[in-house]
Length: 509
Image 1 (cartoon, rainbow, N blue to C red):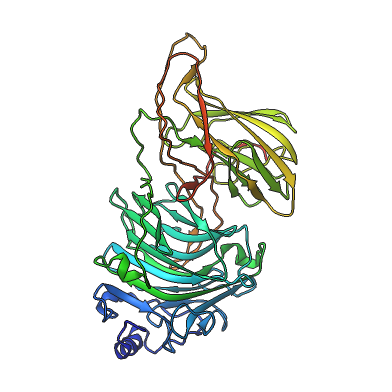
Image 2 (cartoon, helix red, strand yellow):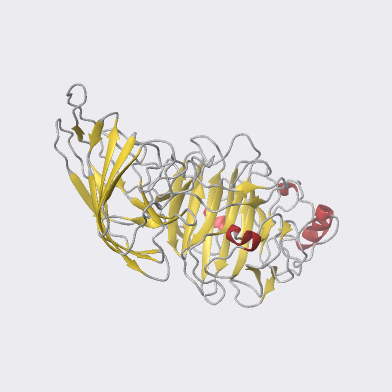
């Protein structure tokens, strides 16, 4: 059933854009700036601003449509989550660009409050949504022209859902959510307090279970409140570019936006919330300094696209279709001033990097990672030693194997290494003892995107590295001198940060 008053919807839809918009109209209409809560207040729940179940012949008429083809958006009778219809979005790699990007999206009107709830049911058909190593954006919260890339997005890459969020591109971080389940309906619920300060909040539920809770800034204070977009945006198809696939089809149903008084029960189609022990992960704050540093994960970078392939630890198995690879470790908030890499095995070489993100083969400072001598199939050992003003912290040793394949993928993640707080002191002008206790629960992340002067985005591929943060209840005492303790724990990133900032220093490519 439709919670909106149908007559009111039809009347106000006409006033919103001048005439009723067909579900398959080509985009190019001027965007409306009307505030939604004055128009589409749901009748059976005072806390719902919008509810679209695609049962009417003119779905999402209140939104601005951004697509170029007659098949880009319309109603479908199969599959459906509830009722007789769902909303079908389709994007092909040879579609004409709309709003300066390859997209099939709809943009919701502006809001006047920074706290909102959002939900929808999503169906990805296995024959219309093949696995792709390049990401798709399927939800955006974008602050409009001049603001840069969207501050929060829901994306899919390598058949995994992940959330990217942060107030600026330098602070933006990716959080892995779950594997994509195809040929079935999945219901997402989001509760977001859009703020650039510590009161910012992003909560995510998937099929009734809370999977993410992120506290901290998620809004650029210099721009307006974000507007919600749903559909498909594929920046890797802009200007005749191609990826692993050439077709994206997805279905939405029961799309809701709730106001600041809404609750999980208002936003879901049935059932109650299951709150698992999701750790709150502030983006910019660190825990008490008496705890050990969190696990140091490695990110494998595809230097051809400057995209992270995935995160791995010691004992990992990597399948690669090219030698054009690099590796980036992440140390959390307690970043060293430089890092030394000692690679042995299939290839032997030593390198140093003195600016974050400490890449094995260097980068240009603008998110362009280099492959140097490359990483070819074989067995490797990589010793990573972080330095801080002449003081060498605990060295971390990773072993991994690269095998040739048809795609770049982390086949087996291995285990991540934890750097304890003990430092190793080296001799310079004089010898001093120094022991420090470090900790980190947060990492910085970024994307490099562009935007148009309307509310749309033309996001460029993420130039980012991967971060990992995992709880460890083990307590460790710091000791002076050269003693070093290393601990390992099982790899896994559900709800954890997995990508970080992409900038660095010049090295030869």
